[in-house]
Image (cartoon, rainbow, N blue to C red; front, top):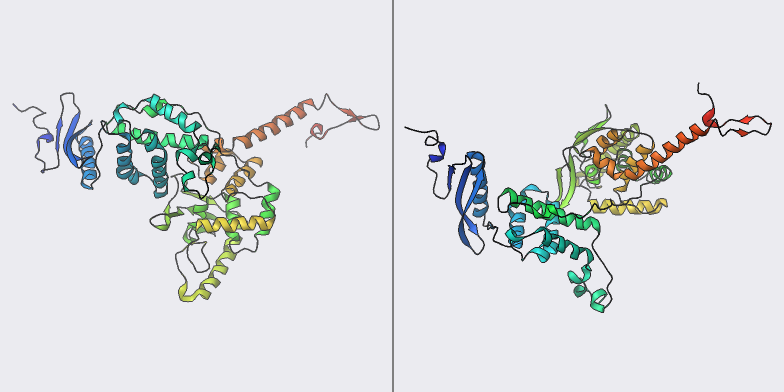
Length: 435
């Protein structure tokens, strides 16, 4: 008599080297196969899933990684070996190139030197906590041998420590990279739990920024009025777009008749591709925004100027559809935009701020005008409203203080009437009748 387990598709014949897949007595599915291991050896690995498809997909991923020449580490291997595998075989397919570059730098400068020699299976929360405490209190000039690359010895090499320690934000970032790597090790069942999640580093204070005031914003717009990129600066300040979103904007994204702009991409410089158009930062960043009437007028003027530049460049013009380009039609490098922006700030007699602070200025000025937080969140393209609320908490606190002071003045009005020169009671503005 044939049982359901005997008729299971797990009994089908698989090609040589594809591994085996079968159902266990506990109902789970197990897949096993040989993959490349450290030391140019091969070992048999086993993965599990609730369905045959899930188990087979896990095994197929490991075999494909092995076929690319990337050794699959084991829990008995070192943290260094696993982090190298994770960067080369996993993170590289899940992260943007610039983010992957930052992760690689973090791993090579901090994670591997501090935890790399430990066994992955034996890594404990105490190990992670001790290592983070050392990072927090150790001068980086000494640890990373920065002094060795200087012409003249300074800091620790000269016997005087400069106490160049990592900021709380950097420590939190390093900790998050480790958590991400170990989380994948848990999903691949290399380890049973993510010990980095059991370590608390504290919530770092958000990076302070100094947005432009309303007077400074008006002064800036007046100073850049005749600049060829005036439309870019005006859109950055009036709509709060990110630098990459501005540089990646194309004419087909604009609907000047209905007054809208669709944010679909961002322009960034990568190590391998140079200036590259990439998807927006998050799904929420891909959005449609309403254009102020001033920006619509500026876009029309900008298009006329760009048409003149196209005719002047003739055959040298690079037609890529971008709204903001160089005088030859090419994309604008973000670093060059930063330099131009700082030159304009100096020319306008304004303090030096980052280009990204124009975005903060937009949100701050809108909050001070009483615009709801959810509207600002949608305009800026934040993933969720908690991001908006956290970043601009200090602005909301100032507005709260103004609100309660206004209420206090209103409540105190009738009892604190002052005598006018003619002997009658002097009425405050808040006590006047409203019609």
